[in-house]
Amino acid sequence: MNALTLFQQVPLFAGLEAETIEFLAQVSQPLQIKGGEFVVREGTPGNTMYLVAGGEVEVVKRAGTGEEVVLACLRTNDFFGEMSIVEVVNRSASVRALGGTELFSLKNSDLHHLYQKWPKEYAVLILNLARDLSRRLRKLDEHFAARAH
View 1: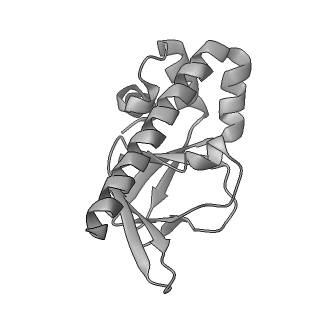
View 2 (view 1 turned 120 degrees about the vertical axis):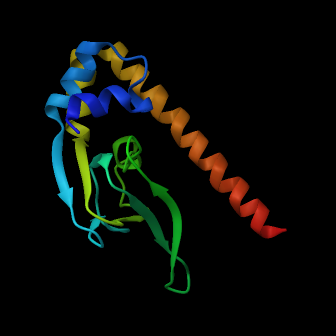
View 3 (view 1 turned 45 degrees about the vertical axis):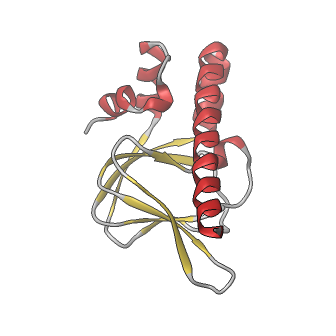
């Protein structure tokens, strides 16, 4: 899948002008990841988010026992690594490709350029990002609440 088609389909970019989506698609970087390969590792610094253009990845976190807990499986049109865009801290989880996976990456500097060029568009993107983070947090809360009973 080409970058522009992907960016037009990912809900994170809903409400953005065509010119903004084209800009983001142009500055994104394509990546091919082999199955079993880690895209990001928990505890490492990050400044990049990723969009899944094809394939599947799993988000895993080390439990207190050292065992991995699968937090989510992400497929085409999903994204991850957005926390490193909002807050510059070490990665909170690892992400591993389950098979051959095609990704596009955006760095926080790409989004800074978006802010400088189109601040209103940047605000729409950040609002969409906040909504998705809230949705993901709610889903995890429900999952852990159900396990507690």
